[in-house]
Length: 289
Image 1 (tube, rainbow, N blue to C red):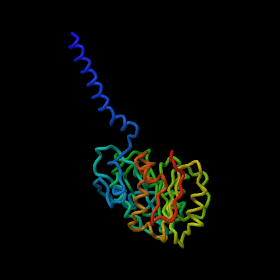
Image 2: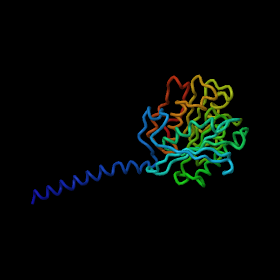
Image 3: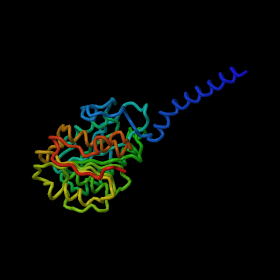
Image 4: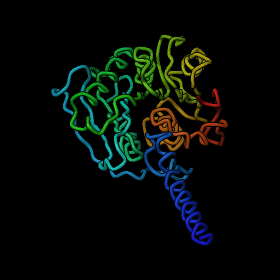
């Protein structure tokens, strides 16, 4: 009988260990249900494409209101669930083609992305901000990919006046999870009421929106209690974010993953402050909340 009891006890221990091991990944997933894709590496965040196959949908100007149409880039598989979404605006006099390179790059990492045309290429930053929000509302409300999106996990990006627009959109809609203004331009310099986690990317040699009068005061004015960062591209011009740029891509992706997906696996690329020949300066509020 003693041997039988020992065998039963051993079986119970083995079963308990098996259950504990099996529960481990489930518990980890429950702690952060928004992780999408494999664990990131430097190579993966610098890659031109991520692990998700993507497709596109053209959004005609005539089919929407509040913005000028655009292109949706989205992961084709829904095996991992829904995705966060990002709207991206071009700058003054530009069309969506100026930011189109970011569409498939971010979508292949696990986001639904819309690059927009604005109602007019001469629209102000505030108007572009309103249009970014209209594009997000379209994505989540009536687009053909709406069922792929988690409407609580949204972000904005933009170049130049579109970057200023992303700041304006964030101030208008504090429920946004992330913003990435790219060499942003705006005549408003103070953003003290903006609470959205924001990564501002400026350029050292920007003569259109010089960092001293745009990106830097924007960053400084954001609340010190908020998650924020400032990355200045070394020896770069205002147009640096309008074509493939590994530095812009890797840190934009890391920021969006960290705050839209709450994916702390990307903290390693943001804290401690990154450095290298491509970065003139980096400021942050690490550790992130």
